[in-house]
Length: 168
Image (tube, rainbow, N blue to C red; front, top):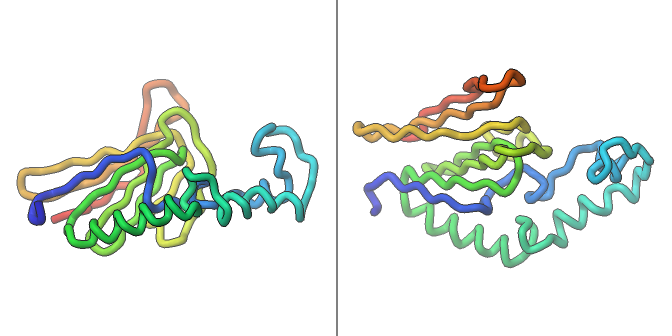
């Protein structure tokens, strides 16, 4: 399949700037209980960083920081490098993200039902914490286009917030 368009779909991403990648908003470091109870603004400025720190470095098996999950991601990305124009799409984090490493494209589209925090930067080409989805278009001429679509407040309305040619 070296010269074919390859789409790999999984639940768990191999790259993420969301909570499962160890990224949390500054607010949760100062007011950690707001992660569980949105109106609980009890300040714990130093102790509040304990939970995000543990999630990033002593992770649950479903977080990128866990040694087995990290090994899986490294192995998958090593295999993916030998396949140009590969797209890997996943969910797990409840937001919208896009990364590109070489000729491989990594998408997180997990915000269909709810949204959670996503950090900007860290090599991400796009991040957005809104309900939406990612749509891929595969054309006969070999081109692959991606659209990231978010749901508007008015029922039944949506809009494209990011569009990019991935291949071709």
